[in-house]
Image 1 (cartoon, rainbow, N blue to C red):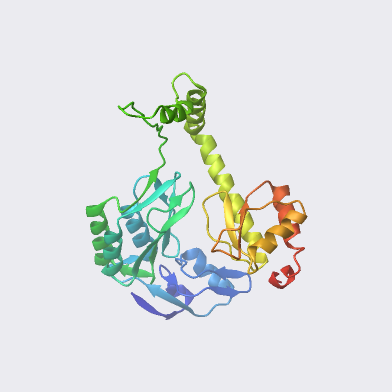
Image 2: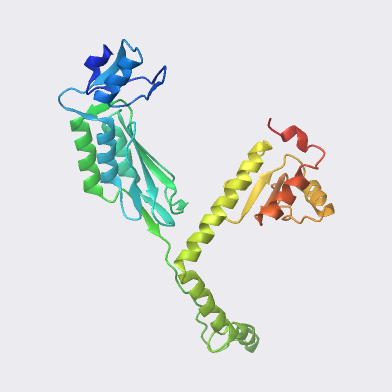
Length: 310
């Protein structure tokens, strides 16, 4: 790959190394320069542009990123269109991220120009979440490095995949053994499921969980609610603990009992104190009006103003 300044007419087929903003022209870094770009550069009065030009044996950054991304993509995920040498991978379903860490490490050692980054293995993910990215650092990479990465991934495929959640019904089998106390039998009797209320509730729960669309909507709503809470917390310079549940732990930097009592006085109930997390409160995510009331109450704390970010 060759770098250097050239006149616009000589830049045809090369890649812009830097972004250019001049007059009405906006040419982004990484743009492949065609006849239209050459004409725009001349019209804007640009006399010289720094470009990268591929040599025999080179592969463009976008092509290499797309090829490697396709090779590592497994079930339950998709690769986005490569752009500026980056190809992002997204989950197509809710589930657990499964990685072949050893293969990913080998891919990252093939060439310093090739990098693959992922979320942690076995992380719960939701549909549409970005789970990995393939990045080609320079504007091109040697074809042999691309080919080696694709071949390495093909041997281990799948390198990255999303294992979707599966609904399972579970139960407990209790058997009568000689010497089993009648008291124990009586204690277990309320949990009998055959032709009882628990059996009906089990069937209802099973039907609800089998409604995949509703489960997806609930997971997405929960994720959005957590993000809204994190946004509001960050404005107040608070650092909540990352969560995938419908509640969040927040470090108030003050005794938790004092904060809990303050909310209680204003008719807002939050979770109990969790020793030894003596400055953390547990906040269950509610409806938008409920969360508005929560933050209004927080902002009435005597020390809350010093947390605000302007």
